[in-house]
Length: 171
Image (cartoon, rainbow, N blue to C red; front, side):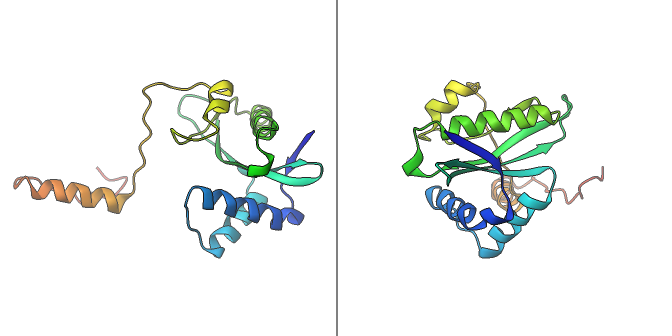
């Protein structure tokens, strides 16, 4: 049986091993400081939460999620990370974690739980069964410097283009 509970101080070593496993799988590099900062947030910030999933007492999965305001709803819950040790997959761990997080979200006034995944993620079959796939929905992310470089490159091909230097919040 899968047991799920909030992360505690004593979970640090197991959590970090799984977090680094997740990052290695997705080819994400992070500094030791980043893991430390995230660990502190998971334990100290009431809107950011971390849970551990255990099989036979051994930590085999982690999830990180956060609550945030919503324009149209009271609040939403975003499942930022879900990772299960490859040796423990296909044993109901991810399903149990998602259901646990959804219940915690609802109990805390966030009936809407959502997450993102890669198109070719091995867990897509599970996600398609548990969640609702929005055909045609495209996720965009914005990084100011990269976007500015793209705009400047485009502007270079159009002599009349002007880039505004407006500060956020100003009109």
